[in-house]
Image 1: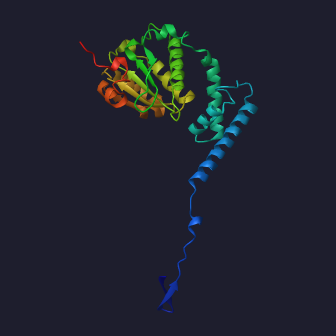
Image 2: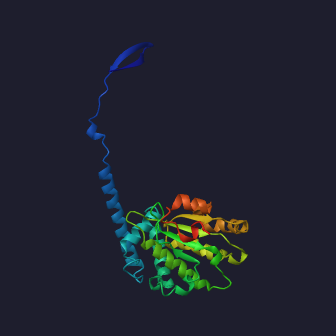
Image 3: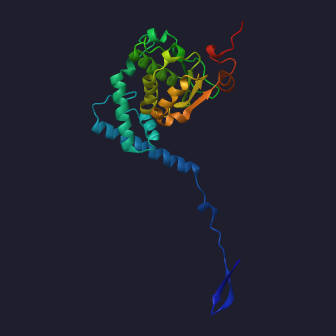
Length: 264
């Protein structure tokens, strides 16, 4: 029993107040029910997006990475915080881009000549967090020599390849840009912008982190110009040393060859 004091004609009175306890079952929060409800709601939104795409953009292709790909639709819904209109807008742009860029036609053979330069590759092993690893060797990137269209094709092919290596329950990849030996001839703001635009518009939230390894002084002014163009992805960038890469992202067995200590 609780005691409550009140005034009655200026005289205090003590009035008994009985506190009742509601049955605990009425206060329970079922995590499982909430999860099921959320999943059902998400499925309904997927159906809504799929129907809207089919109705308003029926000329878009269907199938894997098409307008009826429910996995892709759900991913874009998550990225757009489950806004149907925003997801439809982004999906329409992404699907059209994939068709125009001919992403499905990219293959090891089609990018072989530019890949043989060694400028970029997908590492055979995952990092210690289970992420596929896309490595760019900046010193091998020569914009005055290499065809920029071929560079872009290699970039997209390697992103697709890295995403195919995702294990169950994993959703993001690690990007490593090795800046050792970087000089003015390797500078390419246009390609750097293309790289981050591709992730931002067509592979949203697939890039977990980007390591800029051993950035030389000459790279700093380029970075200052690039930062505003990279939007929210600048928060994913970490400038680090080779030693950090070795100790924090790989084991001795999984360390990429070009990050191993050279033995005489």
